[in-house]
Length: 324
Image (tube, rainbow, N blue to C red):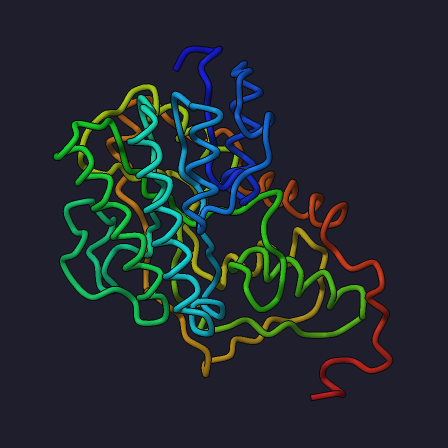
């Protein structure tokens, strides 16, 4: 991408989109559509159409569409599926109509089958059923992958697909109901520490394993593949730390300074047993994450303290043990 090219990050207010905007600016890209005009509602075709017509981006990163953790996927499957289907349909159609030179669509590791061989390879896509707790979201993301490939085949558009690992970092959703696991546990443990509680409950058995990638590292990977990759086959975007949820919870406990115990709620689902991406193709391009996992957790927690924590959380009059 030329340094003065017009670039649009669809979903620039999301965790990944905001990181992309930050890293693009840091790398000297100075003509970002996101800084010129507020984003459209990606679920409204006319707004997306008008945005592309007015700004005429030359390159686009599609990081838009609603997402959430297991709880959000179980409560809002229709909303998550509809929002992602509409966003992808509108952004890709407008990118085609208004001559975007290249587009990177970000899918999700949830697109892989529940019982996928590890590490997950792109030729495993659609080889089995998705994890039931997020199957609606997964199918919407798979539809986005196939739509990119369809535009390539029918119109020779340079639309490529990246499949990220589990992402975390500044700007994450820290709500207890809808957030992903790192953000949820950061908030739970911070509030438990402030209240003087002696335990935090973690969903599931703690045995599920996930690959975690800092948002700014993912943004760097996206920028690299936008420059160096132009194949129809999706490319996995990962290479971060792979941990069990139990080990992850312990790492967050140390980062937050919570001294109580962790209890694992076996009545809650684990989700996919293991999610680890085969990132050999990305690594062959020279990509390696820059930020160590412990440092990334510390940065994320500091952002939470400054921007997202509730300053009115009061110390509890009784411990969690007494209240249980």
